[in-house]
Length: 559
Image (tube, rainbow, N blue to C red; front, side):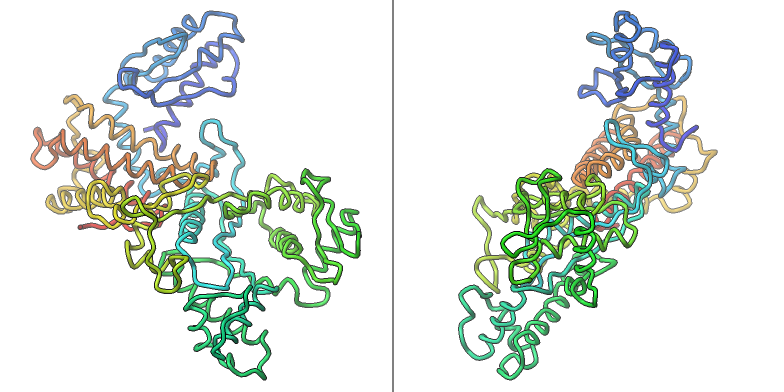
């Protein structure tokens, strides 16, 4: 095989054929896509439609010329081409192409699908940025309570996106930002103090059994001679430890836990330095005793306060200092998944980033929509801590880590998610994560029955793969799904869309199930056909494990 990515090679050959017809490099916008209907071929291209306005010739005529040029380049790998509609070119690839594609997948091993950014490649229509140093700051729930179920969506999204970006070739670091300063932390301390003294928390304080638990755990909580700020610091330390434990259980590891209070420490503090930079650039002014940032200069609907009239910094001021801190650490791109209630915050963050001298396109606040837990069509509630929320730990107790992560990731992050607890709990083919994991376990079982020696023989470069036997449509369809992984990873990385990998995992499991239903593996005759199907099963098992790994989900060998 000439390339470790058979689809990329086919796309390059198509672009080369179009260039040969036009006498110039192929124009942007050339697409090579899988048709929606099987009778439209294996792949289709719009090359002739792009050439028609340039060459001023009918698209169907140009499609014929592109088809002829492509046939010269692909040889026996192209079975035939067909012209459809106004000038689309449908390609039917031969069994030889499919066999070579399978060999390319196997030869690439664990590297198959990875490194697209390093190669300067992007999915069709996506931006090509090359390799970047990316800091993704996610979850960052305030340390004023346990992680709730909705935080599970943020955690799964951020972690899966980081894995996908790394696979694509970027350098990625995961960071959790703890808001351990400000009035909310003092209210937490006051709430814990009140519970320790047997009183109700302040009206604007924190409620729930977990506050009473903190009152028992924090030293000096009931001693009124101990400053409330010390009680608050003790409560934050306990909650930080609990949050880290929950995230570890969930399979989410952070490289850095950044504390907001560090921005306020030292003289000058990082906040002071950020304000000085903005003032030096003429981006701030004073009005009514407060210090304002001219965010309207950079597209915000109104200017924003950095320092209140009493000199106290706003939360926004800390966010500005934090963005500058991240940039000073050498991170080129900052990804920031935020909650659905932060829509209005996006414009001011980008404006502040620009005011600091940064390219606002390198700051990406990604909106994560709400999660609703349902069971039997009704809102799901089971919290032991407080009736108003379900903790992430409670959800993990109920449906497990793998199901929680898959269900949190199976819908686009910009769409509200309804998580069906009963379905996620079930062990049935209707449960998508169970279905995918079962497909992986089934392949492991088949390969175990064959034994390592037989499997190794089927994978050997010199193995007889029954080349004279025609491939079953289910074999061809499964190979094309395997070959699609590099583009799926590129799409998921470029579009910040882990749900595409969840969808691919389910589709790959479905294609394998169709193949396994239609094509006997163990005992298939002649022996070359069995070897080919064993090799196809191995490739399917490897890629199922790989995509589950990108989602942070286990790939069990038995179920």
